[in-house]
Image 1 (cartoon, rainbow, N blue to C red):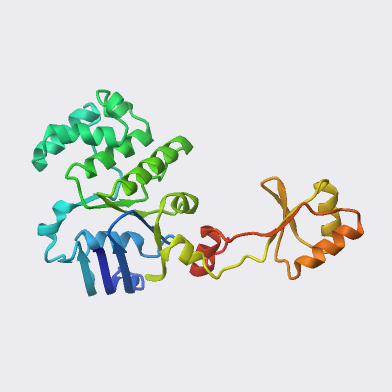
Image 2 (cartoon, rainbow, N blue to C red):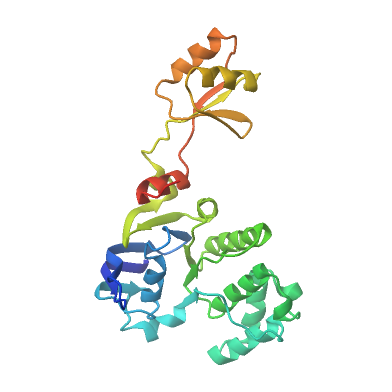
Length: 304
């Protein structure tokens, strides 16, 4: 089943004293049921407008949008119960505990207190649930926001930059949580993020936006297929001396992961010849695989 379907969606913002801003420009996007779908794009590419349009916070000028198989915004009241979303910084009562904040939201939504405890378990906050929200770290606050979005056991969970502003420990916690949610088989996670390494670690599928359009979509492997960096990884016993030899021969060389990375190599056999002439014999010579960041920069035309 397709949980998100967008066809030819356009949205232009009128701005006083400025030219109109076209946020969506004939956007086509499909997200199938299951796993984690990464939604990537540089600032201003239209990611947030896409999410706000799906949730009925903004109306598209043209195009068709469907959530869980139903047209939006027309059928949004019927399907919103199956959608959880964390779009901005979650707002809770600072002096109340995490558990009490969730219980108040659950009562408003007609959700049982048993579900509150289940959600606290899902986000690994049960042991800290009776502490005041204002004493939580940023990562804990974000996880409580995700718990709130999960209260109604949604089929689709939309997360807009959930790791924004978090320290490395908070980013790791959110990453592991998203990975667990995507693997449980009950919820499809639609993850908007600019942290490409994080997306590559947790996402099954990815869509890349630029200038209001989707320029690539598929599994991470499919998006990377057919792209080559032309960089080569080199390992030799004396890397410092080998680097000096290669640089004198006109090659650009970096140190990476305990090896040498030679950039934009036209002929790998030339590296072998140059090094052997100076008494350096290879223990490794291999192409550097393109990662999601390199593909992203190529597809969006962004400067590295």
